[in-house]
Image (cartoon, rainbow, N blue to C red; front, top):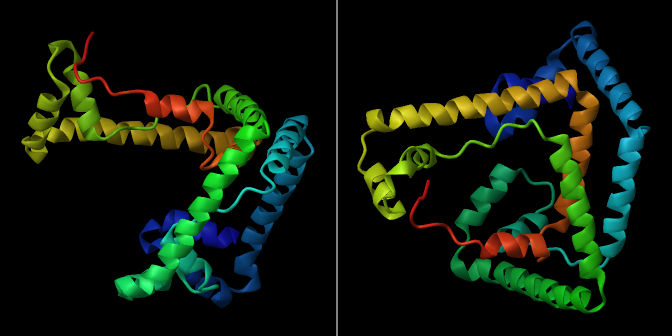
Amino acid sequence: QYFAFLYFKRNPEVGASSRIVASKIWNSMTDEEKYPYHQKFKEHQASYAKFLATEEYQRIQELEDEVAELLVDKPKLMNAYAVFCAQRGKELLSKQAENWKALTPSEKEPYIKQSDQLQKDFDRWKEVIAKDGRLQKIEALEAKLKFIEKALTYDKPKKPSGGVRYYIQSKKSSHRNFKDIHKEWKHMSSAQRQPYEDIKKESMEELNEWKEKMKTKYPARYKEIQAVRSALRMFHGIPTNQKQKRKSKKPEKVFTP
């Protein structure tokens, strides 16, 4: 597993097939060549075991256990393609995608119906938790985990936007309509767009540097961030207050200074 991870990191062009390629290379290696990777794995294993014993992790684990107890009867949400994949077992994802595309609309219909039924079950469950008081407890736990995540990532650079977003920001002081600025971007040449795409690239590099710094210099903090995010993923699809507020925000049509 660790060798596969390193291989993918060093050879991103192989994409989803990285594990297969890495597995073949691993099987052809001698015990002596494998030794450094075994040692690295032991180091990571020891580091992770140490993290599991920390008070920070125990605090997150307690919150995650509370969440799991509240969501014990939560139905699983899956779109038609996910239902199809779930029924294909251990078939390669690339093969599943290929087989899905080959299906006719009538052949996809059973999977669509199953997905619709899962959505109905989930909607009924949302009504239940709103009535029995669980939704309020879920919202409180989500807010607590988000607060912890924000505290842990206080120095994290913002996720870069597209080049068009940086172009729009550069025009803030012009008081022009958002749609006009966006239309202007569409008619710009690649050369005219490049300075803004470069800003995006620089921002992405800055974010990647931060992630690498967390992994190498502050591994405990990095693992804590991952644990918090893992717990937050459990809230997927639940209409909590924070999500409703984000949806209700309307984008501004005219920029003001």
